Length: 161
Image 1: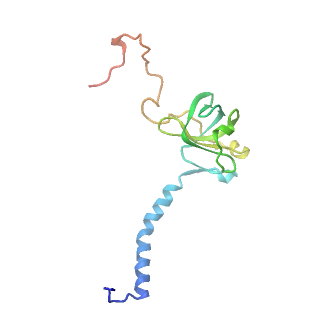
Image 2: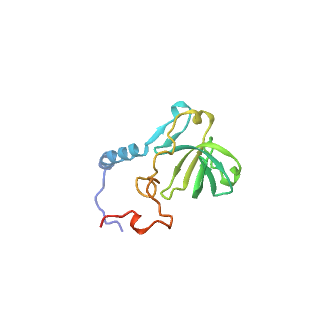
Image 3: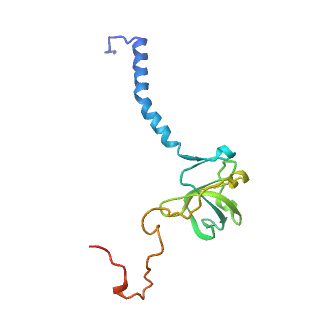
């Protein structure tokens, strides 16, 4: 049983569709601009990496343990490792190897994404990990006095009330 007795012309339908597209176009353009936040290394024959990606040297051990710039750390659960051909590589296949990489970390400080670099990509300049990862404790500085268990109470750092 059809309750709609009026017919909608194709011209009216086209105008309504065009209006819907035009109303949503600015929102679509904004989402595209936000997703293009990359450091362009494709200009020198490389890939585009997200902003905040760091450069380092990684030595793979028994997964999930790695040596990143000489310091032992871990791969995050579900970490992605991509080779120079943009294919996923399993961490166990890289055990015992070391590579120059771009990497990013998660909020816990574990490495969550690793890009193995080609020789052209490795020659381009990129910042290292000398900056603090997050701008709050415990990621900022290690220059504050540490409590080794033998510090007297009156010498411990105090906090405002």
